[in-house]
Length: 389
Image 1 (cartoon, rainbow, N blue to C red):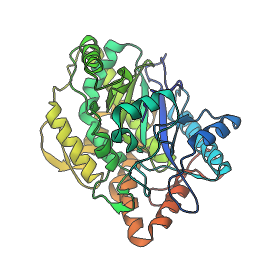
Image 2: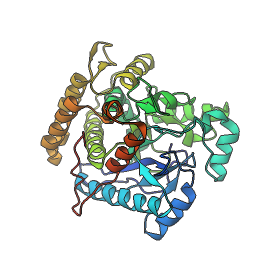
Image 3: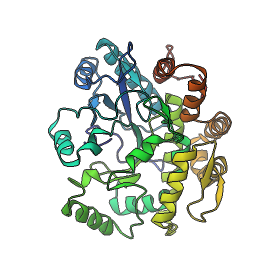
Image 4: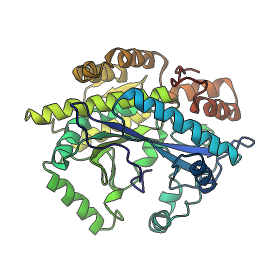
């Protein structure tokens, strides 16, 4: 949810030409007997602290969130993500539940208790059922951009690629035991917030600040932290925060997204430095493309938000890869990212796995297998899982 805007130092200022990167991952806690969501996140977070992990509470009491440190490289990020998932899973097990990386609960009721914190209680009182039904999990990627003026322009450049990132990351097809026919049901639920989804094009940082202040003044947001757009200048860190993605089923999936997102921001930074103006794609086109990506996922159709041309999601991802190739070449990541994307375009993402698995086994076994995929195994620092494990 990111309602607290996170207290961890997810990413920060960078000294090299390659920006830093950090990731927030949100998870569902489930009971290993009933496989229903477990609403004891405070106890799990307290246990995690004894293990050396600062595990954040989320809006719903069945959710927790990890925040990575500032990372200079994708390999460093991978190591932290593996460690954090393992520690969070251990804290969950010590409290009789399990950690689950899905964008929306696979089973359970439509509403959950709000976490016991002043801010979350205030959100529950102000937004009612909207808050109670938001037990959804995202993957928020922070990339270091120290200057807000620059950050707003970076957002303008990156916003046209948000639907492609959503299609790639979709991991919430099954919800409450039912196939929703949407690859990212989380994105559909998330869009109900008054300030969510793709952001407008902002001419200046001042325009961004003015728009946020107006929405706070008119009462649709409690404060600026509730500007829940799919990309935004972070409200408390010197970063651009990309919030469009579902939480990923495996660490390798998260790492792929982080590498792509960092390359997108690095590419945008160079364009801003050269004085290149971002495409002024309309908000209507972006909303259309985002909805189609939420519906179709990585193996379905896509809408190019600039031309409104109907293409495949895989073609859109191919265009994205070409767009960021120079940035990936600079970090030596192009080959690994290209290979991982090629695999995704064949096997699909988390939502495709959910759909295939539910056709083969019952819901309880689906949840159990999804739990197994969530936590890296083995003693090395590489997840090693494949998209269909």
